[in-house]
Amino acid sequence: MASMVVAATEKSLYIDGEWRTAPGGKIFAVNNPATGKKLADVADGGVEQARQAIEAAHAAFPSWSATTADRRAVLLTKAAALMMERLDHLAAVLTSENGKPLAESRGEVTIGAGFLQWNAEEGRRAYGEVVPSTAADRRVLTFRQPVGVVAAITPWNFPFSMVTRKLGPALAAGCTAILRPARATPLVAFEIFKILDEVGFPRGVVNLLTGIDSAGVGRELATNPLVRKLTFTGSTEVGKSLLVLAAGTIKRVSLELGGHAPSIVFDDADLEKAATAVVASRFRNAGQTCICTNRVYVQNSIAAAFQAKVAAIAGAMKVGNGADAGVQIGPLIDARAYAKVEDHVADAVGQGARILTGGRPAQPGPGLSGHFYEPTVLSGATHKMKVMYEETFGPVLPIATFETEDEAIRLANDTPFGLAAYFYARDIGRVFRVSERLDYGIIGANDPVPVGPHIPFGGYKESGLGRENGSDGIYHFLETKAVSIGI
Image (cartoon, rainbow, N blue to C red; front, side):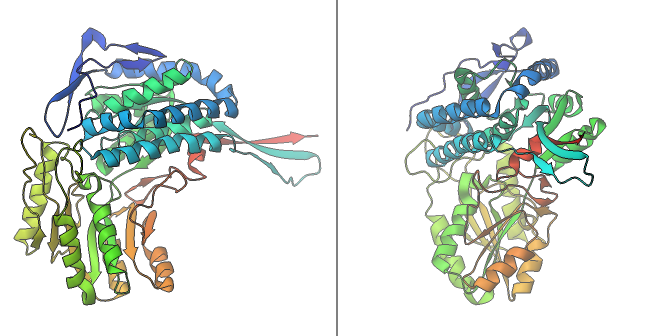
């Protein structure tokens, strides 16, 4: 087992360029989800500390927004380079508080550093325009200017990359920021802020606010008029509440919310590759991923063969502490997540689904008191089962069948969500048809991981508002100002 890298010591708030304790020395514990042991005590900041962070960011905004894009890019590039130098340490911290396998944590840190590097370059290219005028004595220009103070709220399932995916474009655009990481996984956020402090971001430009009063702090970030943009990744329910709160000050809002991603396997697919890809998509981070496959539709003529391949691959996966070599499935984040998985499996089986593999709590070994569940594959799934319409967020893969392409599209789109969808086919006409007809913001056509700094990320319908990443991600942090000049 890898040695523990996080000392059981208090972690502080980072406000206005200073590490601060919470009033009265208030703290909360962060535990390892695999072992149940305490990793660290963390400063428990509340609404008053949120206001202090907002005021610090507001005071720092004039100077930071006037800083050249090139200087901002230099700082982001230095931070990205330090992240890669400390890859193994950061991955170990991430695994200790989240539970995912070390290989996945290394991948997350790598892509997270990439978000900073990508946005460092995009900040240099946030161009305005010269607009052809309708009058001979007028010249029209547009400028791109930072929107102002940004509040970022990030989830526990990708506690490194979600932070850099939000802070990267905000800082590159010239905004100042307050980060509110998930209470279950704040430790890797501390490591990120140590790096930002080390490379020399000015006082107040970035602020870290940890604590357990999620509702109170969220309300403050969403309603405070000094915050001009709120960016949130999390549940659809919470996202809707924040959107309502933010309406009072008409602030910009970006939301990356829940999903219920379908995977469609057509009869012309490469079955071996499709089965491997579906398992990779579904069981990454023990299924606790917003864009991972939630349900599979396989064409009837190949269903038996496909299901056998998927069950064999999933059934051979090693469950255990993500810090141990060879582990592919780590623990669920907490007891609530575990209970939901059990409920979804019981509901499906009670309505006629058949367990092809798994379907039980996992027993990964001594010293592991966390909540582990076997990678589970179900056949005979229908849309009456919870697992087919609620986001399970666990290592459970339900499989249904279909006859025609039209039926597959209809079933895949039968959800209020629209974040990611996948399909497997070799016919090029089908690739285009299906890509265009799926009502989702991200499509993986023969690709189980359609993500990266260069790929726009966001959803249709109740899966969110706006896009992160890609060439237009930075523009969600910029205002466009039109200037008409008489000559």
